[in-house]
Length: 263
Image 1 (cartoon, rainbow, N blue to C red):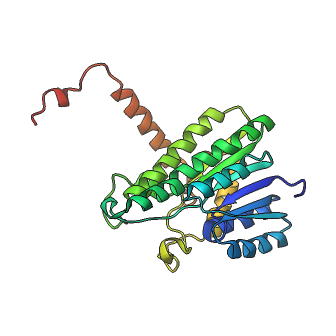
Image 2: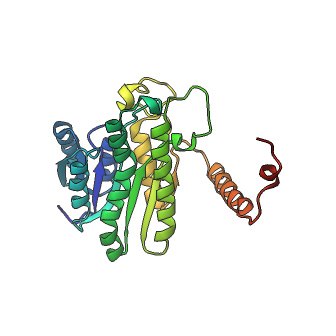
Image 3: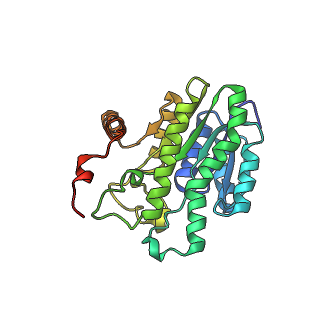
């Protein structure tokens, strides 16, 4: 590697992950690219090399305990300055249709991996007093109460909601440390994701645009990045609603609507 800061990008063989890798390469990072498909990683590595990055590739499946352990060991090596946890899978299905094995693998990939890798990289970032942790979530993280033309997404929405809550809370813990945390929440993106369902949608964002938004958010040290959101007002309202819910719900007496309601 060179004197350029090193970014570790998971799920880097295609889609948003590949776009993230190339975007951060263009912005002066060397790369560790991690995904299951070694051949696809080599293709992305070659393109990143054309952009001036020194590139290391690592084939690992983060949905398995062994693959996640390999990734965590690399993240903890002490040289990573930016972690981009992008690897994920939709697993769209009603919960009762998800097998026990898939349940474990999907949760590990979508929810556990970003936490495990952040925990692994954090000591070296804090020791240096600089760096960043990025997790790619989804706008579906905010969709739990919505019905309508949305996929069966109980497990996926829960995992991405956990990623949003984890990253936002971590950002608060890191305040003043020089290390920042950002969660990226795109909507529909034209990639191979979920069988390429959004690839030809005219209202889908390109992975390159998502990666650009993420890079700008990291540079600005933003905590929540919604690439299609024109302004911060909606996020401000969300935070205000959270404060109000906690304030109004933190009472010592039972609310009258429960005390007097009939079964």
